Amino acid sequence: MQKNNDNYIRPPDSVIRERLISNTYIDSDDEANEVNDIHLFEDEFEKVVQLSLQEYNNQSELSEKNQLEFLSQEHKIRVTKFNNVKIIIKKILLYDKQFSEICNMILTVIDLYEGYHIEKFEIEIETYKEIYNFIKSIRLTEEEKQNLLHIFVIE
Image (cartoon, rainbow, N blue to C red; front, top):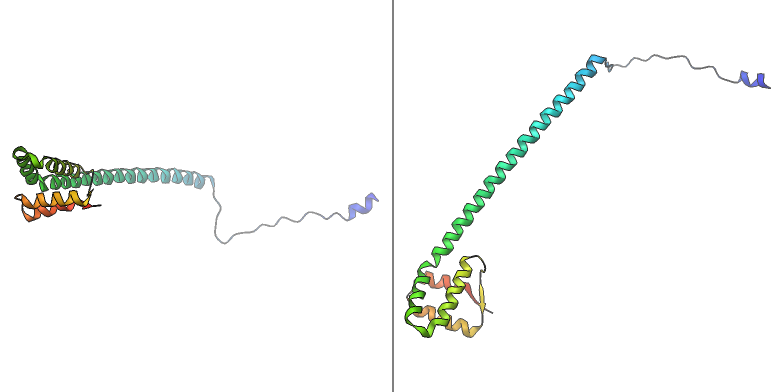
């Protein structure tokens, strides 16, 4: 039975040699060149990443500098906006004690506004009327009065 089975074993296929249309054969020099090219590419890539990171840092510093400059200018505008008002109210506070509570409240609210702690100050309607009448009675320009009343809001 063993002999019968040997007859059924197929002989190995013959070796076929194929040739591709484009030459993709790489010899050892080409492999070395490719490895060098890969290292050069990695080096160039690393340089580009470093330049990009440096450019990003420069842009961030410039942006931060511009933001700080803008905030500084904005703060100066807020401070100068009420400079004359504070001087007049402080003079009134020295001479007229009946308005001391209102004057102290207005000066405190102005300081909070200048320090960016508040944008609006909510008060009751009675207090608003007192402040409104006081502001209308002192010598301020219309713009200064409007700026001051813009901070006070009725609850």
